[in-house]
Figure 1 (cartoon, one colour):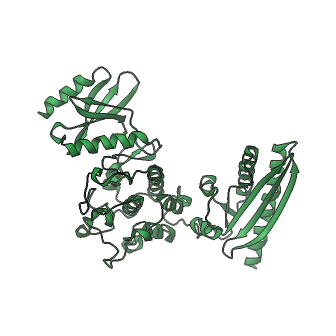
Figure 2 (cartoon, rainbow, N blue to C red):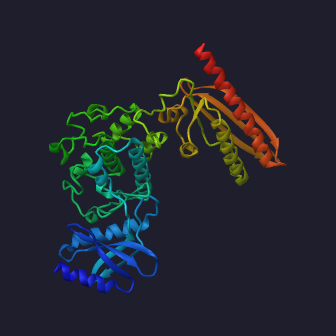
Figure 3 (cartoon, helix red, strand yellow):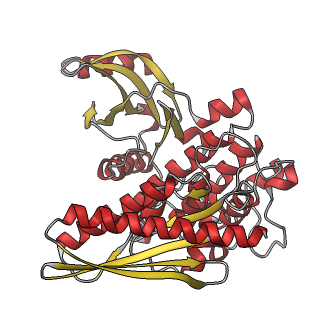
Length: 429
């Protein structure tokens, strides 16, 4: 019967797609490799199986189409088109030629640190994006993370859940778990209501596995992970012989806390802990373990006082210029622009930002204009002592905005470098 259906699929789609083979088949659907006749690209077409087309299976399949088609993110597998074959739904997505994380774990065991952190942060960004749009994936696992051209993409929103979905439309009931044993959070495994922190737990498990080459729990514990009342400690990477920095170990442990209230508030917070280390190529990087002559500093995006659009451009420009100049000093370890920009308009305190990034010093500032004049205020803070060690204001006319921006940035960068060099020298003495 199924081979007969293969032929039906080919005939039904032959005007647009040429089916070239089968990529995989699960309990609910089959994925075909096809060539798009109108566009020069290969695609993957996922078709619900005839024998799996129960009401619930069809609902889950259509939910995957509905959710995934609404999510446009570089690390979420997109949907190109949808349709039906003999009343069975299908959708078309890009053909990802790379392996899954599971494939790499089988071949390599633990992944290189740089690869594991990049995958964790990219998938974390994708999940946070989905969460902000009310979608919880519910099936984050190595098999659903695809790798292509050095980047990771999350797939399979078939059992995803919108928290606002009515209970009778959730394709589950209280006390009945839906997900993959071994990667569900304690609340999900017990069939309780879930929220985005459930995906965070699953991502923590995957990150643990990528870094250590093994699942954090033994086989007996995988189906139903220990909850907050079990008294069982959250596994540590250190306990399985992993020797990299404490920041990563603490972040992964916290993401897997049995009590969801003890996890990070959002996946984005977990990503922010790992991001400063992305790109590391050894097993011993850590923001807190700097070179002997190094000082860690983060330059926060300069704020604007008021709603003037030109102030916004000026603030961004001066932040970029300061970053560029400060980064040229090889005695300083400067947090990247990509990371520091995540703290734009953040309500977090300086000490909290410093702890997350491992930076001893924080430079912050503001821009305010009035007519043809602009005032820039900059402050350098010793985050460990939570006190200002330098501050200055600069008033300039806006006859030449770019020139004013460059001059002020030069002065701030020079003052910061000199101040930190003085403090470093005093500390050594």
